[in-house]
Length: 117
Image: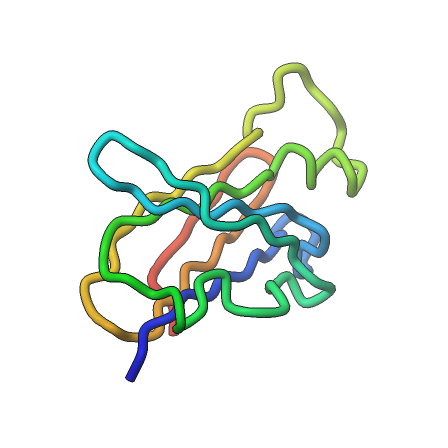
C-alpha cells in the first residue's frame, strides 16, 4: 500500500462544508519548509484530489496551512482586524505508508483537528 494524504474542512458555525478554502501543503526538512502544493476545497469541503498523492508520498513531517481568515471573509463572517483566526497551521508526522486524513473543524473563534480515516 502506498501512502497518501487527504483533508477536508467543516464550518461548524454554519453547519456545512467549507467550500472555497485555500490550503497549502509543506514538507518540513529540519528548519526548512518546502511548499509542495496549494489546493482549494470543493463544495463538499474536500480537495478534488489527495493533497499529497501516493506517487509523491514520503514518510516525514508535513504542515497544512488553512487560509481560514480569507474563507471567513468570503462567507460573510463579521470582520474584525486582525481576525482571531487568519492562517491555521497544523504540523504532523506521517510514519508509515498509509492513508492519512487530517480534517479541520472550524468556527470563527476556534478549531480542532484529528487523524481521521
